[in-house]
Length: 335
Image (cartoon, rainbow, N blue to C red; front, side, top):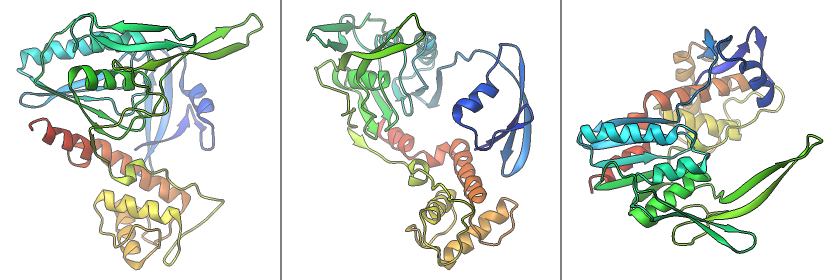
């Protein structure tokens, strides 16, 4: 929920993502000073730059139930995943929640390594159908570490590419239950061909198919059980035009964003349709007071950004009560 405000003293407001990345990244071992805004108060951090290899996070979420979140599929993912399974084995884990939400994919070899910890040797993980019609089959190496009584895979609309392939493989060949939202639908293998003049051509080489031959591209993987998060977490927030200000009797998508956020944060609202009611103002003024802001009921660009930051911060700090998809998975893991 923090907002990046300055990098090495340079205000980054209005910069593009690429411009911001250019300021933040640097040589390994060097230090970058970043000033964040947390509830509009500045927080300054000196961060030593270095390569980040962590692509997974796991824990025993309750007795007998393990939880692993894969952020992406990188060079170290297979080893990280294996380490968690080895640990779970010593802790009596026999059920697993695998969280692939917001995982945009990555390395094919990492995907095969992870899938091979579930599927017997020579079971099909995926198929690659090339433009000439030929099909290459990728099979499991059978590196099974832990047998699970039940596996639930959590996905959403940002689960793409390799994460979709793994989800489909576990669903079709392992009997895993898929929960959440239909995945992104990125099922193409693309290759970059560089040229001597510095240019390059990126072209589609093949399409990924599931073990049963189903297409992923532009279709995605449909969950067995559909579960949504609160819309404050999934809706795109309104982009203000100039110096717009909204108050009682205003009607705007910005007001709807505010109302949904208030509801998510636990404040009482009477509606979420974008009409700025008196009840909305009462709840908003309470939030402003809690954020240390003047309780004047005015909704501005900076104010909505602060509200959005509060939503994100609450999501990360209170996932045990706010993550409706994970809560549903925990309930279903025992069925």
